[in-house]
Image (cartoon, rainbow, N blue to C red; front, top):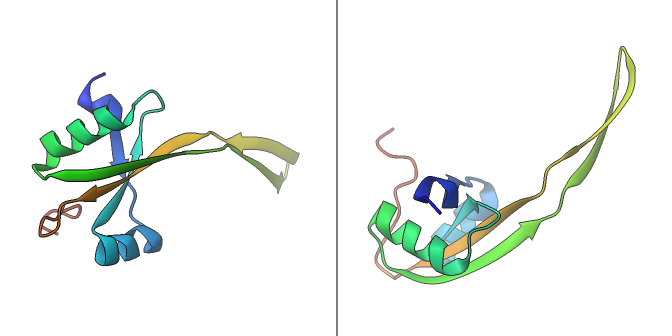
Length: 99
């Protein structure tokens, strides 16, 4: 797999920010076929950090319903895979760049 297929985007939320501050752990949305070894190598190559641990989770799809002018619409949000990557102490990943 290519690196762009493995790391899709970082997840920036309150929970991921707390994990970053307390445990030096970052959350990423990753490809469904990516395994832990590929994720580790992709993060190390892209961000130039030493990865200690990788945890993966497959988030199940969610049913979504809404009422519109046309009537009741049913749909779903697709399932996706996310990875929690712990980097070595003293190293950081700059997700925001120079804002």
